[in-house]
Length: 378
Image (cartoon, rainbow, N blue to C red; front, side, top):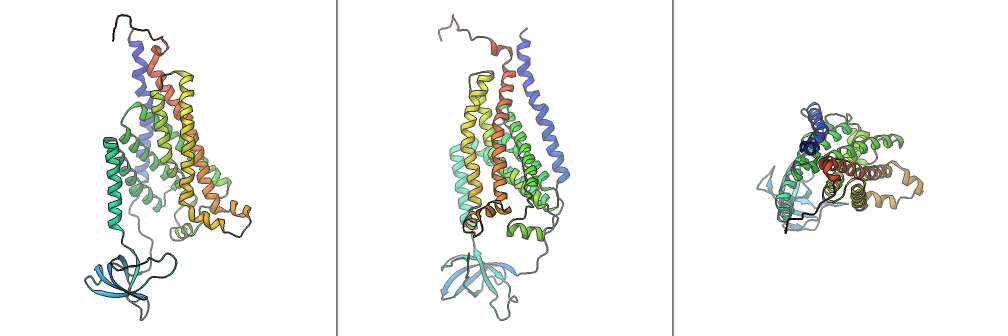
């Protein structure tokens, strides 16, 4: 009768596969159907050509520049020093980005400094971050970097082009997030039952986040056009659903925190020596502590990215009620609140699923008392 004890454990992979394989297939089919064709850039007037240069001398309000790439390469030119808010501060030896537009202003200088060159420092910064991850994480660090590369690939090759191609942003975000989730979690943590539990919990929480976001976007009557960037994008890309784009940002933003929580919960359930309700309660205590810190992380991440907006609103002369309920701030509240609800929901969902899978893996043997070996001296 030993086969009766092994049957539940043998069924466990099939239980997960019955849910995750159709979900993965649906994600793949949706990506194929939504895959963008050739996305044309928005028409823009010719504003000049890009060039690179090095500052060789500065004199009062002008600077001498050697052109190192682009139109006029190898020559020298004089440029006016940039002025105004956000203008780059220049020093001798700085490498700069130039705009070559000789006919832009009659009698004006052909070159204008528009920015600093940052490619070199950015490459060193990225290499330092990769080195730190590999030095500490070793093999797991390598797989996490592979997952990060997969995330960027999905975002740059699918999500952004598909949205620009006019596909529904929320649908594209859900499909893209699901693809990122499958790739990142399995690449980083391997193909096993614990990772599959985390994938299922993350997928359920993502769907809940998207539904809540859609419901409250409608309830708050948000248009998705709150700032200058939104207005410019809506004007130049009239085929983009701006409300859907707002929801897409919420779903993608929540994914980064959700997978961390679900993986932790699945691992906690696997390590705790308990069964049934005792196991669920013990794992939930760990989850509550994790969520308490993760919620703070989520809100602070939104606040940090919106710090200029917060400062602007703090100096607004309108009544506080108008400021707090305006669309600009309402969007930030929506992101934080919906992301928090999805994060909190991921803990009981993942914990319950992990406990159920573990109990089926243990089978009838989990209810037997542990007997001390009488004939072993080890």
